[in-house]
Length: 194
Image (cartoon, rainbow, N blue to C red; front, side, top):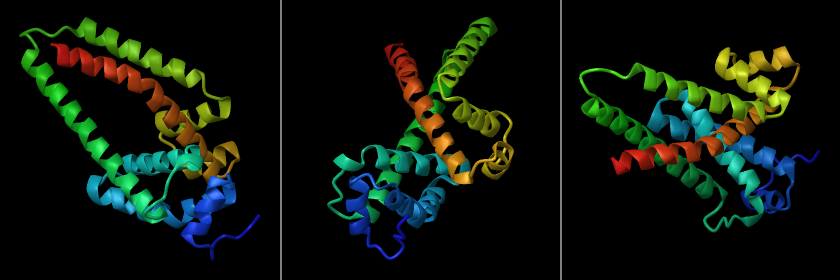
């Protein structure tokens, strides 16, 4: 495996676009902490910031051959973080507004049955999506999100590296985000129609 620690960002970009996973790993190691800190300054939520940074790196790898780094790698990554933070603020605002509108529209009684059905259906949907993940990926997700294990604990339990744990979590979260995005669009559409 090549050591890219002395490589410039421009050299790493060229190798990344050719699909060199070692160059990607160097970019990941070089920028992860700084990107996390940048997101954390704005959101002050470590778990959410980890997801944002993982999402940026996932998209970087997936779209590597079609990306244009006109202002450089660093600028591209920090801009991606900024836009992801803005999207997070928007989602939080939408959630807050949704709860406010539900409180205002709520009659004097509550419809527990309807809410329970919605929650049950949402849980079933998520469970179904998780069942489509590869077994190891699903195990890592469940240990992380359901049993609240750290990446280090998961790595020890499953006898894999922490980077592999991160990769599985990134894959699981990306799949869930993709699947739930359509679901959320339907909910938002329904709210806007009312």
